[in-house]
Image (cartoon, rainbow, N blue to C red; front, top):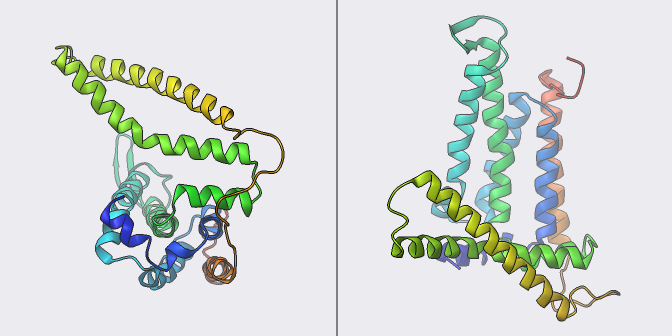
Length: 262
């Protein structure tokens, strides 16, 4: 665990059930996915920015964690601006590139929507421990224990991929087969990693079956996954943000339901 992880898991957000974090992110994201207008996403983003300081994250940690979002959102908007559906006045037209008034508005809406959807998800899930999430999915959502425990075991194995990749790279260099041919080397290492992962997964499945993880009947859990007032408050905040954002877009006439008639 890194220093940032240790600090994040001591904040107020860390004490909330991961299921509530997942549900709150969904409540905010679903209405924004169903529309493509800048106002609803902008209102949601503004409300989220007002609440982020209360999440218990340090600013340095916040910027480090959300750095990929700040990089991906402008690139997505740029693609829409250059290649999106043209409408209104045309500003630039060259080969496949067509920048118009409509594509710029669409790019702005995409930029704000990506930020409004991704930022709360990152802030909420930075404190999620996989074991706590598995406990919540099994005890609160009542998902099958076999599925939850298998997914948790697989998630725990993801961290080993980097170690395996480094070990494969060092082994190939020691044998003198990693000096040139980067594409060929990458494909060979990827296939070797796939084989290694399948073998490890088979051994893990056998070990879990031997220890009774797949036994029928109701199982017990070492830790209780509580779902109380803090969780319901987070859900209410997520629903309120979504309702205010949608209401503002409908009131201003900018609501653009993407599944409606074109």
